Image (cartoon, rainbow, N blue to C red; front, side, top):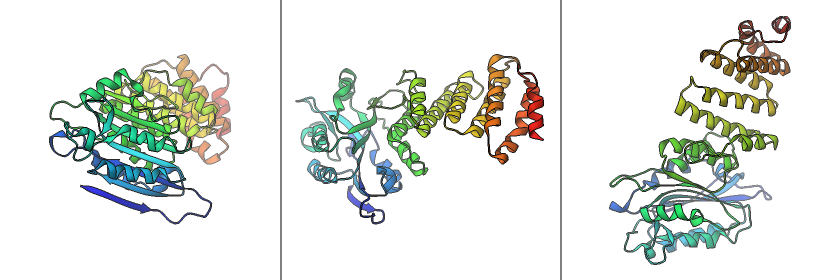
Length: 370
């Protein structure tokens, strides 16, 4: 166990901001360990530095099972002094001290009796980050709570509030069963999304990761805002208005990504042959239309129409006809001849089965195909 620093990335251009990422994974050694926190560090270390902070280059500081809270404070203070964007990733265990009932992040030598002296007080984190300019600091936390902290968090959802400046995303899981351990799957999901090469907003990364972990660990609490609610039993808001708002604001990648997360959740809970899964395919098809991607929209509407027919819906069912009509309309809006030719045969075959209520639709489609 120890502390390692690593600086990665090429030298930045003079005017380009340099980001800083502090990766802290810690848990008590021995029987007090209920989360294998450090297991997420290799995945995070494999992420390109700039992907972590949204900058061309970044300095990455890794703290693996540190022993002393003062050491962590020193590294945290140095990271907070950096002028560029700052990302702090935390994986570990959340405890309350017995005297003041304040939250602490356990470190390698932390025990119940020595918590106040060997763990990192949460208010130290608040103090160092709250002085930074608003909008420059993001904290991503994946924490396992002890019984006292879990009970307190339920009664006081703002227990881990970081103040007006930093943005906090994360989850806190309930105490595992006696002798059990948990893993930082939420933070690992962030790492996998970063490594995919797609640059997504932090809010979208949070929603995607929450969608995954909601099915793996239902007994959890999400931290911080999400621009679009994530699927799963822990969030019950209707996501459609927020998804539409994101699309109308031009955040098409965010809207599509979160709709896809909800579709995966529907597939997980209801199966591929379900109305719930088809609904989210249709949502994604309409989002593609709003994003100016008619070929993709046509493709998704074709999938939705075939799925509804596969569920036993009649060819004159309004939902089936609507899906085919929309696929036809988006096909006509496609200005890429190769994509249009590729989608045409499937659309023609479907239009023969579902002629719709527009006279001559099949004939017009066939003429244009030739």
